[in-house]
Length: 361
Image 1 (cartoon, rainbow, N blue to C red):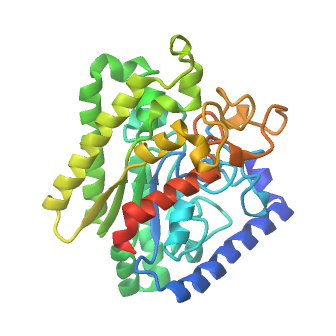
Image 2 (image 1 turned 60 degrees about the horizontal axis):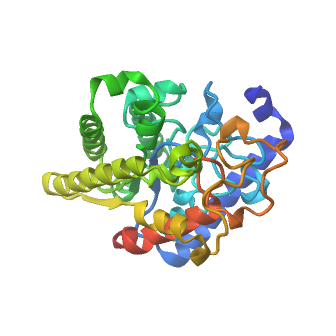
Image 3 (image 1 turned 180 degrees about the vertical axis):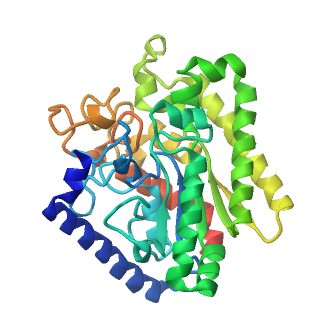
């Protein structure tokens, strides 16, 4: 079904036009700004997946309406949002293109990926067992795709220029939530083997090894993303019956603990690896502030999401036929029960650009 969808002439034409438009805008803006970072290269989960899952056999997809209704051309790209996601805004903030394409998007090629690409897969995590839950791309496979990308980039730009792009690019990692909410607290396997502190340490070990592998492949500018206040996601609040549908504090505590360990990891890696700059991009506090004080940021609703009832729907349960979907996503902090709206993503991206990533600008 997906293959037939992508073979449709009119849809294919739209995809190519979007890719070409991104290239034109990227060249135009980069000439004006003169960005120090020539490309944004992304690894992670649904927070930064721009459509890779469209090309694999999984139910973790969002390449249908109402997803993408506020995206360029109203297109459902596979982003779990009504529009753009944080890394799109970060790319634009660096003077690059306004949307980072998915590596597996058949309508794009290496010329589209030269200034930015995402290998992320919705439903993935640090733990291989997490990606198995929804049969998505595990983190090790994302890295294999990146190695393939390096070869294509050097063939396209030339060996020296390709190496320069690889070393000067900003590498962004955003994942971890699924390891806890879709794996540890849902599937009995890991929780029977590790207590929560041990599992956090297990994931930290994977994160550290991944960063070291990126470093070994030439990466020198890396952003390691933190966890959001997981207990305040609409899906978790919906099931918090005894807490009157408030945030699940024990999940927020786990987020804080894990973020603290990630921050220590970043500090240790900066000392261990020569000529590298690794930063910790933590969305926890800005997102919690938005959730607790939505009106201060121009929102009206933060407890439930825009799509459908806003309590538990995401993916295929968030579809165009649901009469409860809101008409104005800008009033909502969350788009579906697990993911922020484009407006929220823009605010978080701006916060990270001004407070963390500014040293790369």
